[in-house]
Length: 189
Image (cartoon, rainbow, N blue to C red; front, top):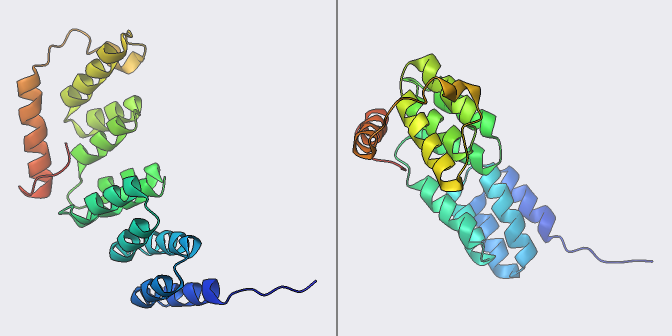
């Protein structure tokens, strides 16, 4: 049995390995194969060529992934961008590590990353270790529990049960923390 195999995937791999993503995009536009576009999207994300990833994701109509890549591209801080890329690749421990190894440490963003992932104990651990944002973690935890009508079942949060947190005060602290870590550049809530 004989069959023919198109040379395009090998060409795409060769271009991507050489960092020649403009040529990758040109090849995909010429071939018009959804599979080739999907492969390019994966390779572009792996090489952190967000422009090519954006084009490829548009071609395969992956709107949710495209929006996240656009969000990452617009982040004002390199460490936060790299962290979000690791999160996109489902490497949450590496994403957190990037934030905590930055100089200065991006503690608020590391805490918020764990809150977004519902890693409550880890978020509280970081906040307590760094001596800041414990109130923000507890505020998010309470909102989460109230939304789902559940009682607190994590021992670490037990010592903060009597504390009161005002939405306005927490909102102000979140904004200050975000702006402080980004140098006043804003960021994701």
